[in-house]
Image (tube, rainbow, N blue to C red; front, side, top):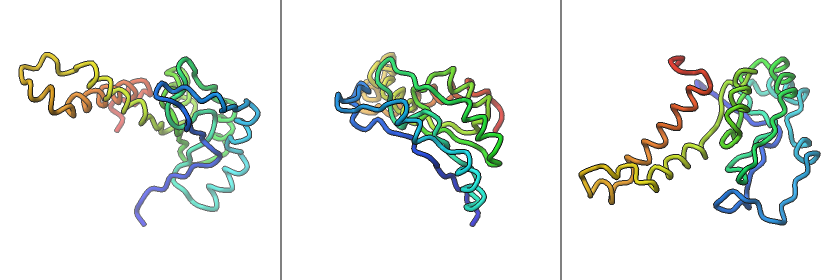
Length: 173
C-alpha cells in the first residue's frame, strides 16, 4: 500500500472525566492492579506483530491519553518495556506521553521507545502562549487581539523543540 501502519495493543487509558485542571472525578477509582491488567502482554505483542505485519506498535506500559491530575506523574513499567523491546522487532511507541515526566520519557526513549505522542502538552503550551500574551510586545494591536494563531504556533513549536532535545533527536531527521 505504501503507508506506514501503527497499532496499539493493550489499553492506554484515558483521563475522560477529568476536569479542566486534570482532576479526576471522585467516582473514578483505578487500582494499580486494574491498571496493570490493561498493559501490553509480551506474548500477545509478538503474535500480533507477526500476524498483522504492522510497522510500529504503541504499547501500554503505564501512560494514559490526555492530561494527568495536578501533581500526578505516571509510573512507567520499564521492566515490561525492556521485555517488549527484546521480543518485538518493530519500533515501539508511547501514546499518552504528555505529562508523563521528562525523566520517564527520556528514559523510555533511551530504553527503546522510538516515537512519543505528546499532543496534549503541545496544545497546552500553545494555549499558554496565547493566555500569557506572547505577542504583547507587538506594535500591531490587530495581530495581538484578532490573530492569536502566531502565539499558539510559537508555543506549540517551542514545546516541540524542547521534546526533540529531551529525546536526543536533534538533527536526526
